[in-house]
Image (cartoon, rainbow over all chains, first blue to last red; front, side, top):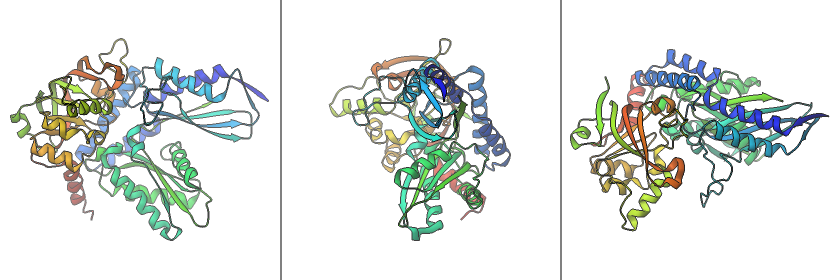
Length: 281
Length: 187
């Protein structure tokens, strides 16, 4: 049994929140660099250049790249031989988020009640935390600062098995089309297929944690990801929805077994500020 | 080359802009997003005065991050405009002339923009650190309790924008994508 202290989780989480918001990942920067070469629209090129300049400025000045510093979403791989002491894992994550966001001059965007819109007492907390229990004695934290604009344009539909692959593709393309400029393209499109109603949404979210350019390990799914990248980029929506060949920087798909009557599909859109960090304790 | 314009806007400035134009905006603008719009709208319905005279003004849909000690304002990029659509025609009828945000407007807002000879600009979503550098002065003028959603008066210099919906009813989101699809022969 390995002991992990509450305070170590708090400080790690606080660092991740700040770094995620100040330092755009290498994978996104590289995707922008590639898009700069391939984008066919002049306006689109100009926008990608502006986003690269913005990312460099944010890193240099230690300021958030986007004013929407997001909901802090965590996927936690908790080794079953870990023993967390001095407090609970969830409290530690929430305290780390509040601390990181507040001392890092990030925005608090969380309200406590969706209907009364009452403010939360903790700064930008609670976080959204998904825990997966895994073998071993490590605690792995995957953090995402997920913006509201792209989240608002995300969709889930319980398709019929007879809708098949074509139905799945159509639903995904329709989601990207309807989102247009609202979701801040170029996008990372996260897709869950299978599971049930809530697992499907989780799979879509989880897929977004995979770095840009890394394909699914399942060869048929990897091929579907590549097909969808091409088809989405043929929509012509382009950077910021003003026309162009770069609508998606990447497409990610995660699948799971499902009921014989079901074909759930969820599409979780991520804006170009695809902010993810990982830490191992 | 981008067109230099100043705010508050005049009829002449608006009539000379068309969908797709790149502009650099300088002058005075006001921030307001969801919560401030709701309050302004409710004030209108109750027959009360708005917290500032919106005649010929430009509203920027933004909720900035907190400013660090050496900053005028934190990061300050546009938020999605459609959440303000419910309230926008009322404000346009009262004299608001310009809006800055990102994303589609409803048909109702688009026709109100046309009827009121107003204009809607997009700023580049997610370029919030860069945009903040165009903001030279900030003053909270109303609804301070709303925090990031309070109404702020901003002095801006050369803020880069693109005209989306012009006063003649054109929409650059439609035109830009259609032109690209035509050029690339996408059916």
